[in-house]
Length: 383
Length: 140
Ligand code: SF4
Ligand code: SF4
Ligand code: FES
Image (cartoon, rainbow over all chains, first blue to last red; front, side, top):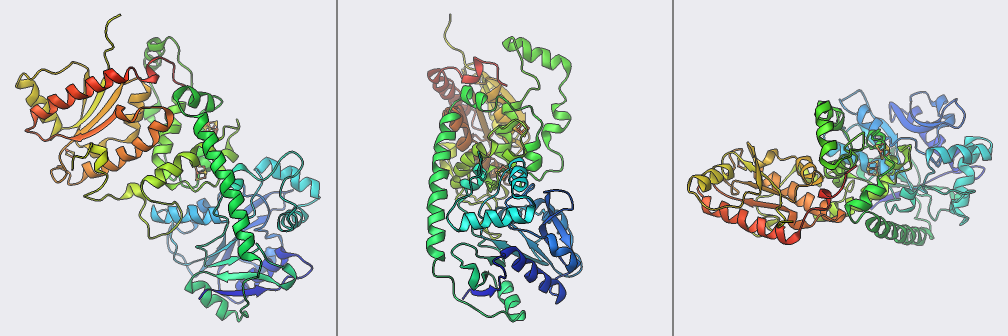
């Protein structure tokens, strides 16, 4: 049976409660270090930070409504090789799911980690967050405003923006595969913040810390189902609109028309893990004569070339691993709706292989494996 | 204007389908001249981006053909290729590329007749489909 403990919340501030919990983990020697989103001494900047000194937890704020990068990328760097002891990483559900993909692609290790997740209420784009935090005065107040508004039914919209499209369309807002996860949805903060153990490791840890068990808050199930219904409806509308906007090559070209081939989207993408992307290798250092030949063929050649080619290739290479985190759109300087396209296509490619990115370490990535007898329709029934 | 003559890019493996194509030629089997053949060591080497590039450059169809399952000279390259083609058949039609413009099949080294027939059928099918959308326009 999954076990839930209640973490005491004082002054109605769940962030402080989280910080206290992290402090206990460090002080009692349960972990060597904690990777957590933390306010930097720079105004309104929140970045994953590896903390070993409990004093440094003061700015830790995994509930801040922003994640400038998908932290699965740094967790992958952190776990490339075995190290001494154990590290806890505090991640959003989409970061956990991206990390699970990376583990399967041998880009990180699950061992020696305690994964701590939380119900994700969404995040603003990097630039929007700056405005949100500035209006609140400072980052910590901004987080509290956000959490209260979201949990008390006032929504997440602010001035002329809202949480990102990726977040609005995300149905994986519960951190199901974390060892421990903070359950904000349906919680009455005065009665403590529920911390749920999803794995034997998580359960053991709650036991070792001597945290009393509680029952799941009465309103949780309903709160989760409500949000799920909203998110799924939004997602399906997004799928339909994106499919209609890209249904042939002309439309796809207008969709991608403002792309300048900067490749920020794949640098930001947690599951695009190749150290060297083929699009930045010699393969694409075309000869001048080649450009002229191409230009002559149709009378005109847009440069830089290969924009549609790049996006289609990335779709083929990684859409089966796309977790819909939206960092691609977040990183695009030209507001190309990259996430919308990738999630829409990913829904199809993942369905085709009966796969869901980030669901489980046990499921093999579709392109890392094959069966002898399968997909006969590809060869017109020939086996 | 004459009848539409499609251009078909065929990625064929050295050990089976290329040999079959050779056999079809030396046996003087009649085949339409629409195919540009690219010899690969194995269909397992056909990266999805080769197929995508061919279609974006205006090829009217792409054929990927190798050894029958069990006969691949690299044991299972063809089975890996089948998953990649499955993937592309899921992605490309979403952008208006007719699924029939991407064909995969197995043709063994001794099957020259089968090779010639596959080409005749594919050319006829693609003629009926008409030109690929990328043929008409500058692709960005
Ligand atoms: S393609 Fe975009 S949404 Fe998908 S995993 Fe990569 S960054 Fe996230
Ligand atoms: S980040 Fe935007 S402009 Fe840069 S390559 Fe991606 S889609 Fe194009
Ligand atoms: S060698 Fe022919 S398909 Fe692999």
